[in-house]
Amino acid sequence: MSVNPFDFKTVVLAKHAQHVVLIHFPIALFLAAVAFDYLALWKKSRALMDAAYFNLVLAAISTVPVVASGLAAWQWALEGQKLRGILLLHLVLGCVSSVLIWVVFGMHRRGRKMAEASLPKYRLIVESAAAVLVGLTGHLGGFLSGVNMPG
Image 1 (cartoon, rainbow, N blue to C red):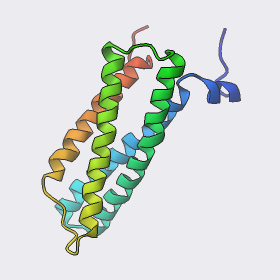
Image 2 (cartoon, rainbow, N blue to C red):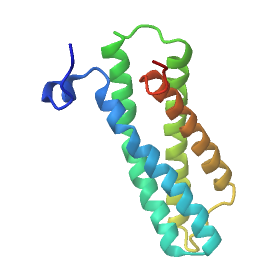
Image 3 (cartoon, helix red, strand yellow):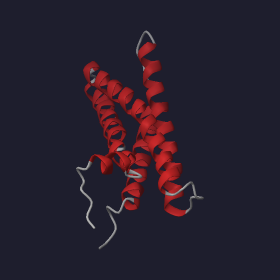
Image 4 (cartoon, rainbow, N blue to C red):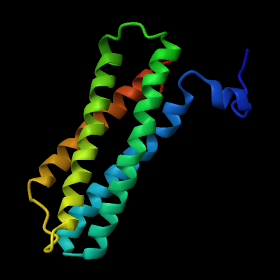
């Protein structure tokens, strides 16, 4: 039996559809923010720094429905059963990724509030680590959703 991907019930009520759709926003926004931040530092551009900041604002905010939908998918699709293996690792890394996105946003927000608008140099290490973690979390999520599964 095939499922119509344009059926409203399928779109809204699929047990994990919202998470799978929503997750792309914070990933793309965060990775763009990191790229803008590196470019801003290299080019010494306030406009690129602003682009990084506003992407971080949206990335951080968009983690809230993503985490909520991921937890809801666990409760709904898996009936709250104990997680293990890749699914547990995906949950842990997803939560840590979300926290790191908020930490990076906080560093940028604090830097914007300071008179000199100076940002700590160590933020680049935190941003890079968070970007790697986001990528790893996304990779595991793709594997779980069947994107990388053979056959």
